[in-house]
Image (tube, rainbow, N blue to C red; front, side, top):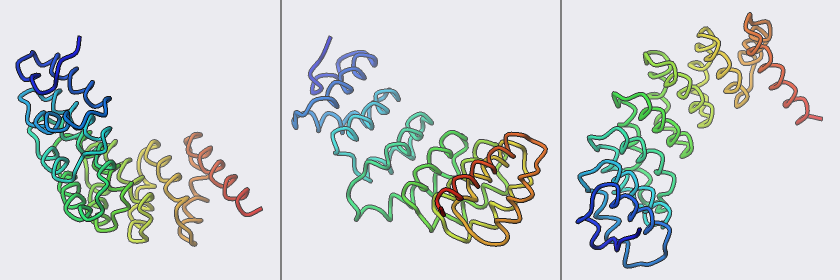
Amino acid sequence: MTHDPATVSAFAPRERRLAIIAAGNRKNPDDLSSLRDALHDEDMFVRVAALGALAKRESLTAVHVISALRDLSPEVRQRAAQTAKYVQDETETTPLNEALRESLHDSIPLCVVSSLEALALREDTDSVEEIGILVSSHPDPLVVEEAVAALAEIGDVRGLPLILGAAEGKPALRRRVVAALGAFEGDEVEATLDRLEKDRDWQVRQAVAMLRRVESDETD
């Protein structure tokens, strides 16, 4: 069952959401106004669907994402961070990155993780210091692991000491550190990899071996 997005507000949340998803898969320009209106729907899942639909239609703007990053619903905030990569206007880079950095303080770990992923994809060097704080002090291990990965993706040398420090963490974090160190060079990096090569956790040792095998293949 499908409905015209222009009249979809008269239907139940599930029907509104399905109509928005359908509109996202069409190429009718008349749907765009309704998709933008759906960002303010009372149902959070309709708002989530609207973000995805606008992204698919290549009509998502930084204004849309920034507003959604401040939504009361964590599901909407997380989806906003996930769709940030679809904003195409380069003139909107600065305000969007600033909003994503603000979202690193979200009380919901999954929202923080998605914001970290977005900032990493955008290679936002201005976020290195704030991401470093997450590495050293955030209570959720998933956030810490993603923060380490984000620092590696951004590739700024200011993040290296924080990554090296995380090598003292739990096995899952140490494995992330190994992968992250692949983005850097230097004596400290090699010394840490030498130590982790003898780690008590076999998966950490395996990660080091795989990294060094890849590096060896690249130099051959």
